Length: 195
Image (cartoon, rainbow, N blue to C red; front, side):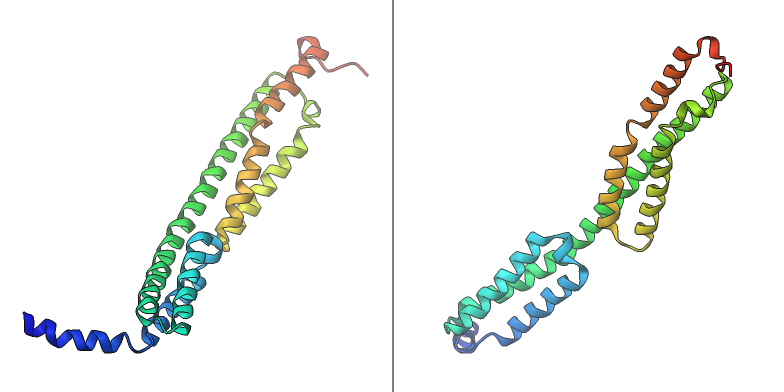
């Protein structure tokens, strides 16, 4: 065992006398892979950490601190690998959040359809919902845009659009109920006004 250590010590010392070009190249490749995966958009903090570790390795080479450069290059490569893995998780989370918001919006729209059927049964005319209907149409169109955006793989954009759309759709069932209640108050017994 001592012989092996004695033989490895000079190799390790010689390795520290040379710039760690292979390690820096490997780190650069790993960071480029992270960039191509979308780390700048999906996990910007991890991306910046990997970039900073690579810059530290390059700086240490300039200072001829090859041990420090070796360590920083390995750190940069590891941070680049971690960023690639984190991108996959972040992408899946964004897609899941967008799909969840879509389902919630569909629940609101189904509730509105049910309220509309109840209003028809109660002989409340469509004109009672004239102020609310354009908002419903906008939500339906926006929902289709979110679906199209997800289809193109633009999950962050879809997540943001779906969240905004969900916030806009949340009060629509209540708006339909209020419109019906207002019409019924203005038209007792559900009768249309005489013309």
